[in-house]
Image: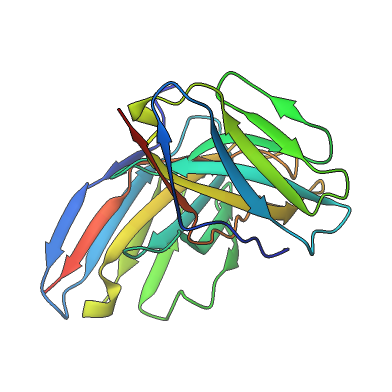
Length: 113
Length: 115
């Protein structure tokens, strides 16, 4: 699976949009981009994933560049409860395999008042 | 959907003792995973079950580690002759399977401290 690069930490004011970048310059055509987050003392929580089109769900939006070498997770209105470590993961996905995810060290997002 | 349940939440043991953790996945999820997480690091894959079959094991899983999923439902992870380096959060996750891009649902983990 392709390696990802994320900033170690970011701050965001409550109510503002949090934009978390991820670089995955060696991504292959059949690799998906996943985002998970981990709130202190809890297990990771799935947020969103995509292949090449932008995706949106009730939690966040995922913007993938046209060359697929980078992506941005957007939390449109960050709250204090969004303070967590955010992991960007790239993995191959095809029928019959298990979703063995390789986590890096992620971005620690601190949402402040 | 009651989520993935892990017990105990915390375990303190002395070096050399054996410990066992339990994971109850989301019902009808046929895939179950174990991960380990040390302070400041992301979770690391240990092993994976498809129903009762253990299909993959990481090189991190030494001979002192054994995992079972006897009836394809709950799973146990046992560590024999614990060492201080085994101190970590042990996370369990499950997924419904069927497609390669399914999402994993994690439990809150078991925090192991080896004294």
